[in-house]
Image (cartoon, rainbow, N blue to C red; front, top):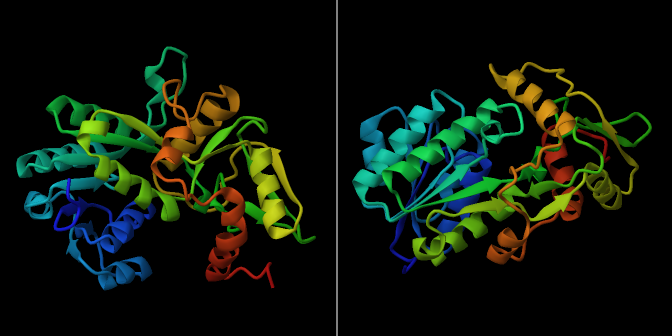
Length: 315
C-alpha cells in the first residue's frame, strides 16, 4: 500500500501506544484522525501541533463520532482501555471500521490465560481485550493483533503498585514485585518503539500479517537482569525483592483484582507472560531493529521522567 495520502484512524490518542503511532505516522506523511476525550494535557497539546493530524474529541460510545473517525480511513490502530465497557466499545469500533471499509485493522490485544487448561486465573483487564480480539476475528476484518510487553516506562519512584523503583535514603533503589527473580519477562519502550513497529506492520499490509498475533516486546529480561541494567545506567545499587504487590495509593476500581491475578499468575503459577503460544523478541526485532532497550531507557529517559514527576534523587 502507498503510505502517503493514506488515512489512519487511532483511538485513545494520548495513551503511550497510540501517541507513539501518531508521532511516527505524522512524520512519514500519513493523514491521522485520532480520537481523544479531552484536548487538555501535554500529550494532547503535542499531538495538536503535529502535521497531518486531525483530533476528534469525544467518547467512544458515540456512533456518530465513530463513523466520523473511520470515514475514508484505510488503516486503523486501536488500543481500547478499561474506561467504560471495554468489550462493547471494542465491538463498536470493529463494526464502525468494517462499515467504513478499513483495509487493515491493528488491534492491541492481550492473552486470556484463563482459557488455557492450566487453572490459571483470569486477568480482567486482559480478558476484555481477548474478547474483543475474538469478535474482530469473527466478523472477518483484515486484522493484526499486537501484544504489548511490559512498558519500560512503567518504572517510577512514586509509590505506585508493581513497578515502583523505590529510591532509598542511602542512594540505592529497591524494586519489589511478585515475579520470580529468574523468570524472563518481555519488555517494551512503548513511546519509542510501538509506532515504528506498527508502521512496518501496516507497510507490509494484511497480505503479510492478517490474522497474526505479534508479541511486541524487544527484550526478554528477568527482574534481576532489569535491576542490573538500571545499576549500569544509574551507577547506583538496585536490588530486586520478590514479594507481594504493595498498594500504597488509591487505585482505579477493579484494578486490585488485576493485581491479585498478576501476583498469582506470574508469581505463584509462573505462567508465560503471553501464554504458551507467543514468543519474543525475534518477531518484534524483525519489524524494528532500532529499539530502545532497558539500559538505555534507564540511563536516558528514567531520570528525565523522574524530574518531571518532581523527584530529586538524581541531584
